[in-house]
Amino acid sequence: MRIERVLAPNAGPFTGPGTNTWLLDASGVVVIDPGPIIASHRSAIESAVGDRRVLAVLVTHTHSDHAPLANPLAHHYEVEALGYGPGDEFEPDRLLADGDTVGLGVERLTVIHTPGHALDHLCFLVDRVLFTGDHIIGGSSSMIEDAGAYMASLTRLQGMDLVRLLPGHGPEIDEPGAVIDWYVAHRRQREEEILAAVQSGATTLQEVVEEVYRAVDPALHPLAARSVQAHLEKLVKEGRISSELF
Ligand SMILES: [Zn+2]
Image 1 (tube, rainbow, N blue to C red):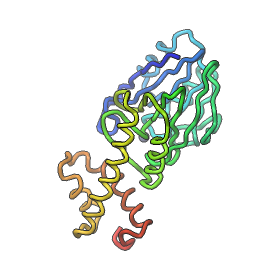
Image 2 (spheres, rainbow, N blue to C red):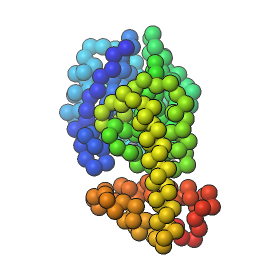
Image 3 (cartoon, rainbow, N blue to C red):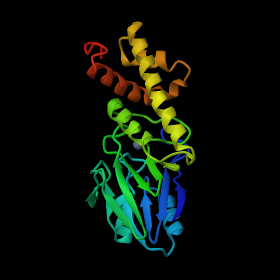
Image 4 (tube, rainbow, N blue to C red):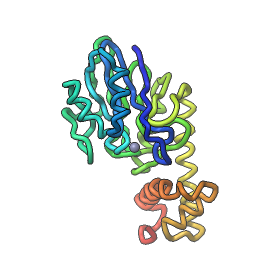
């Protein structure tokens, strides 16, 4: 099994060094997260594939830095684009659900539904290596849309026997257990900090963000606000804070 990374030239505050497009070759290439539609990135993928046979194009989730090139690339190679569901710039030829498998010749890829960062988020497992998309990224925490679902999806990974994580952004992760544990602890800590901010008088999303992310560059506060919003919704749902506040 051979795995290569093609880094998309879309570095930024939301994407770190750029989107990792993964080429997984186990007797034919599967392209995971082709990324945004950028001509030079598409050429880089096509030249990395070379004259090898492409089996399918897979998408971890439908955010615009991961999925838009999937349909054009799948069309080019005359294969299917696979994902959990349609998104703004993605229309799957075949839907994937939790527990599905995709044949790769000698290997088999297993689909794991991991909602939280996005509700349509999937991870892909091949031989104890997990392609994590934005569920877990290299070098920092990830933005979340649904805090309860996200925690459940993280906890699920804690029970798996993994040797490597290949994320949608940042470097590959060779200590999966330690990083997953850190992610769980980090989210719990943030949630406690958010709860404390509310209990000490913050009454708007902005006030909570400013309190909890005091030490973080204000340019990143809009990004942080999405995760704070998700935690507030979870706390309201659990009856731990008043729904009248948020
Ligand atoms: Zn994303």
